[in-house]
Length: 316
Image 1 (cartoon, rainbow, N blue to C red):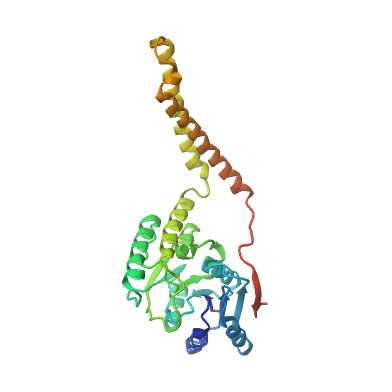
Image 2 (cartoon, helix red, strand yellow; image 1 turned 135 degrees about the vertical axis):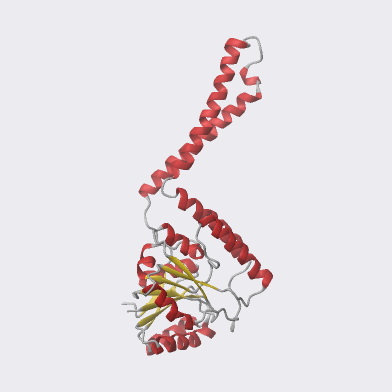
């Protein structure tokens, strides 16, 4: 199979048929073998009914329905697990991503041997204050933190080699940072393509300003995990040892000063420096224990169920 198109969605029943017709037209005109995977992330409208009807008439349409809304990252994780195509294309269901971009994205993966191609919506049809400006700040911070030189990390239109989607683990709200996850997994040939952005035709956006706050918090998380996720003792243990040595050294100085240089002076416990040194040793010990526990958790962690599928279509 040439292409798997993975489409996470939430309450997009108005646009699904039009999106399906558009994708099929592109696939047939380019003679691609393909599958279309709709991941219904707990929709409360008629989205699943539309997917069900499409799957009855077209065996290339497949669907996964969650019991409730688990989030876009979980939807992508389920889609990646089910995808069979040599190239996996992700796109949003709101018709703002253009399926006409698929052939070039496919050829960039297969002919130019990229691991991942991320779309860049250079010209956007979103509000400047609510989306464009926060998005630019977010992308700038992501570039500086991750060293992945992309202009638009959060573009839903991306292309992946099958190996990438089978080796990365998209969890939490990390769908914004899939290129960073891919880089951390060893897939370093990451490219970018300017893609056409279209104004939303139906419904309203599902994302508000809080996604940017969450995005920056997730950015800190992924930075920490990429640097110390496999070796938490290297951070917490090092900080703990340094702080403990500083505190112990200060306490030793106070003791020697009391015993040999100023025996008739104040008691050690009457000096505020004693409590500073004691607090430093305690905090240092806690850092060291945190690193030790982190190492134990890494060695004993188990995969947990992160979403629950209610039903699926044509996946067998």
